[in-house]
Length: 271
Ligand code: 6GU
Picture 1 (cartoon, rainbow, N blue to C red):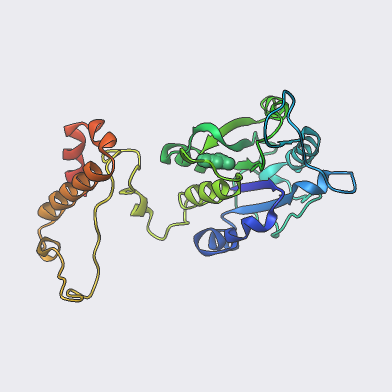
Picture 2 (picture 1 turned 180 degrees about the vertical axis):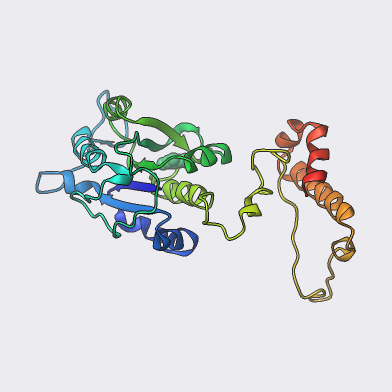
């Protein structure tokens, strides 16, 4: 998978060199290019923002740098293209993704608190795409005309990661890239590991995961639930289901309401 990120804070994306995402990049399963938006400004101060038409607080990101940046990133051709363009393309071309069949339509992910909720379902959908382009903004957001312009050339998704307001879209990009990257084939050691994820689509959808334990069997006078060492797979599954349901009821009563009884039984069989 190819991922391009255009930002005024390239260093904010450095955590993408670490851990699961960093390893996926090193293996070539994920090709991430971070670009500095200011490389596409032409004034001495590298201006990227201006005052909003109609008045109001804050600043709005100007359309011209975004237009030039996205033209260059899209022209570089995604998974099959190699050019870094201006900015700060870091990371060598590593290949390994699908998409040597020529141009493909990118998904343009626009992080904004006004977007549609980012969900596990959307993460799964995005993990099947060959090319994602992220446009994290600062200030009050990007001039609307940019989103309209690229909707004709890309599959544009305005996405929010939750009901709170952050200072910019960079942290949401870290969240979304990690959620997507761990779903790529070969990225998680055990492909089964995300079958039971809280929010994974499927039989146990909408139930949170319950508590987990590992060795030692006693720690600071605390033991582990006996059922987990009983060897009775059916009882273990039932216990996990009950725990998941209790945790979901406590933390997310809204999810329990949506959960059909049949789904709980399927959960028992799947585990
Ligand atoms: Cl995607 N951006 C910002 N600035 N704040 C947010 C968000 C995104 N999602 C939740 N809050």
